[in-house]
Amino acid sequence: MKHIITITLTLFLTAFAMAQERNYISTCGKTKTAIKWTEEHKDGKIYLYTVQGGEKHEYILGTDYKTESWKIVNTSSNTNLSIRLNNGMYSISGKFNGKQISKTVKSKGKPWYQNIAYNAGLTLKNGKSAEYECFRPDNIKLYTMSATKKGSEKFDGKNAVRIEVSLTGFMSAFWSCDYYFDTSSLMFVGYKGVNGGFGTPETKISVAR
Image (tube, rainbow, N blue to C red):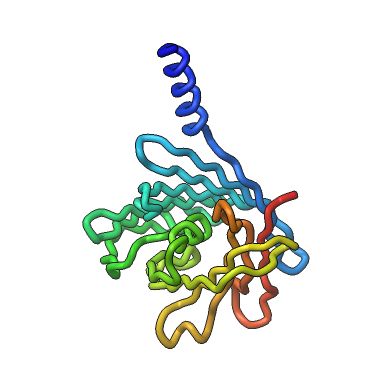
């Protein structure tokens, strides 16, 4: 019996450590792009890998879902950049749009959630709102953001928890977007928002069917 329990536990832990894959479709105007998330749990960390078009992101998160490091690679834009947080300082190194970067940026004192789509549902499971910080991928500037739970509503015909994300302070009036999460698992199921200047079509992300 002891051997059976040991084997069962080993198989369970092995399965848990194996990669879990999720697929989405991003639609902006007439353009559709596939997005793939691959998630692994090992050594007490969460490893999340995302691919959209020719751009790849690698996130390492602690068990509290806070980002510890982030890497972005895009060969077409000559980008291969890594950011790591240690003792309240971000270390940024690599190439961004062909330009070599090596610098440090001081944290604003908020939790670092670089991919808020991954964890907002879980982070706000028992809360109403939270402030966090993240780097804007197109300019690598650090921003303070706000995530606020807005209740449950329909998304792609199913009930989902809607969480609004916006800039903080007076800047909140200029931009916001909505993330949607499964009501049971609180996993990411969708997004709506405008990712660009005036006249840019709304981007919608849905689970791939």
